[in-house]
Length: 69
View 1 (cartoon, rainbow, N blue to C red):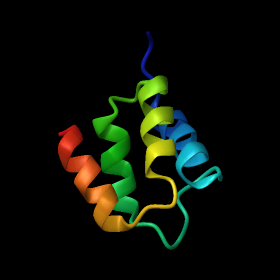
View 2 (view 1 turned 45 degrees about the horizontal axis):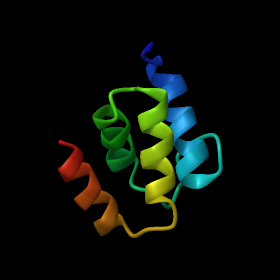
View 3 (view 1 turned 45 degrees about the vertical axis):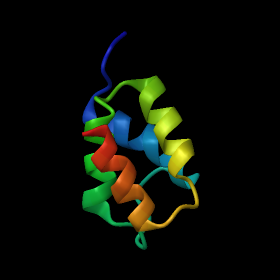
View 4 (view 1 turned 30 degrees about the vertical axis):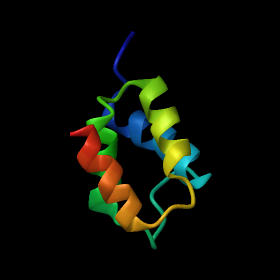
């Protein structure tokens, strides 16, 4: 399986986590980028983790990101 380039990985993750093409203004940009990095820029991981974080609080995101580390 191939790794996505950073821009494509971020797009795919945002599509599944937020339903849009980029990081929303209300989201913690640093935390989003860390989550993408922890997914290893693997498409399946980006989709699964993105959907699992959808509509959750920043504290939940931080907890998931720490577990991925």
